[in-house]
Image (cartoon, rainbow, N blue to C red; front, side, top):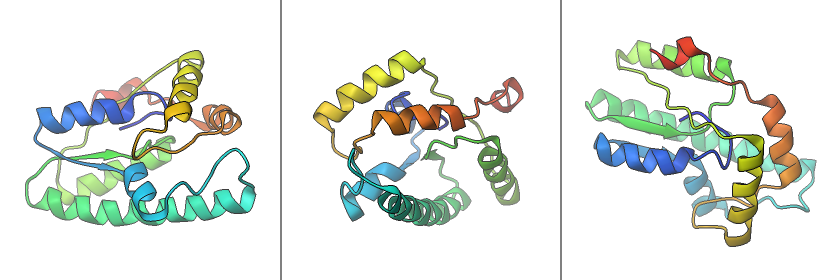
Length: 154
């Protein structure tokens, strides 16, 4: 799954897990269960560094789980975000090494819609989701690399 917070990645991932009888691994759900809400509007750089380190460790563990499940012949949906082409290329190479099919599902949304959804989500904080500071989301929008048409047709 590729997309920013609020783009609809997890909603689409939930539909795809049923359609493909796949194992869905959503890093945010694991993070919240393990560490709770460890960032908010008052978080500083140190808080975000801790959060990001935890997130990275969870992604690594989930990839190890996904690798094993893929080798058993079960489809896997990695609901991580994969904001950069480099991340997507690395995952594509890992899939190639395992000799499994790789496909990107891109959840796209306008800046206006992302902000609207994040405001609504922040006001309710559904289970397995984080409070996303609007300033952080706007920064992430600048960092996000939209997948090319070539990436989406593989």
